[in-house]
Each structure stands twice: as C-alpha cells, then as structure tokens.
Length: 315
Image (cartoon, rainbow, N blue to C red):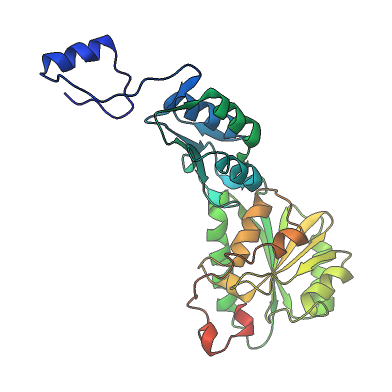
C-alpha cells in the first residue's frame, strides 16, 4: 500500500496500513488555527486568478492556474513579489508578464511548502496579493493593414516573404491581414496612403520601410505626422528591435516595423505586436522599461554578429 505525501490519514487508511503490516508512520498533526496545505493553496490561487484564468484543484500543497483563452498574460509584479516576501512557507510563480499564451497553458502556480500553515498567514497573503493579480487579456484586434515602402534595390520577393512572415505571426491571435499596399519610399507617397487607409477596417496598421528608420525626421515618422497622425515613441531597448516606431492615426495604432520584423525569429517587434493585438495600451514608459531581458538571441538575418558590427537595417 502506498500513502502519498500530504494524505489525510483517515481511520480507514489506518486500518489498511495495519492490515498491510505497517506498525509505525510519521505524520504531522494540525494545531488549532492551522490550515492544510491544499486548502491554503486553493484559497490563494483563487485570489490570484483574474479574468480568463482558471484554478486547478490542489494536490500536495500545489494549485496550478491555466489560461482560459489565448491572449497576453498580464501580471501584477508588485503583488506577486510582495506575497512571496511574506513568508517562506508560501510561494507563487508565474510566466513572464506580457507573454503570449494559448488556452489551456499553465500561467502560474501556488505552492505551500509545509503540510500546513497558520490561517493568519494565509489571510496576510490574501491581503497582500489582492485580487486578479494574474489575468489574460484576450486578443481583440483581428484586422491588420500593411504598407511597405519600396526602393529600387528592394526586390518584391523580399516584401512577399515579409508579408507571409507577418501573416504567420498573426495566426495565434486569430488575426489576419485585411489589406496590403506598396508605395515608394517617399514621405508624401506614404502620407497619402496612410491618410487614405486611416478610416479602413484595419484595427492596426504596420509599415515596413525599404530602409530602416534613422530618426524622427525620416520618411515613416514624417509621413505619419503629415497624414494627421502622431509619433508616440521611437526606439526600443530590445535587441533585435531597436528601431521600432510606435505611432497612431485616427485612433488606431501604427507600428513602424524594425528590419528584424522581416525574420520569423522572436524579436522586439513581437513584444509590441502581441500587446496591441490584445488591446493593451503601450506607453512610452512601457517601452523604455523593456531593457532588462531585452537582449535576445542572434537572428540569422543579421549579416554579422553584434560583436563584429551591426547592420542598421536589422535593428
């Protein structure tokens, strides 16, 4: 007979153990005011779970949390850190904040270390963790418009591949490209196209430049402003992805994509794209806070490794 860790030894189990010849077991007896590990884990996990997060039944002091839908994970980091600092007997761990997740994916876990903890400690944990510290923002933006600027040296096949890579990127969000246009790499031409498409059915507009954005006076930012839009932020402490531009026009977000967005490999463009598809606001402060963890792996599309010189077009 096997009695697993954390099992409540009932009279029936005791009889079975005796029948099996087991004369002695080591057990823990709860004291007044104690709460068993499973109950404590379940109560804390229920408090942690917010919108679109479900809690699994506890086992051996652990209660796991799962995404109910595909979207972007939103985490109250201060609440999680504050909870974990209360006492070593209570712990919770989550996936990284703003990570894209799919329905059924585990996004967090609560683990009680000993067999039981004082109920007062659980109450303190509940107070610190608050409510809904872990939620999934479902994808809401489903339609994307794409504009590519063209120069004589840019082959149409490169743009075709870029659009195909973007379409694949959008699949997890159940989003699609509803229109695609190609215009000369010229401020006036791009501004005219942006103005014409501002009232279209696209909920997000992405501009791929034939040349990387150099500064706020370059073609893409100048065209956004000329079309009546606004440049919210240029530059990002994520590599690859440094040269991303975030703007808006007619209330719709506009991304000036960095060169690395042509690659299917993960880069800073993915981080901003998925937040916007989940209709999460992305502020200047949000972008500037991405530096820690923002150094990503090398991508094949870079002509040279960072250590030997960078290609501006791939940032």
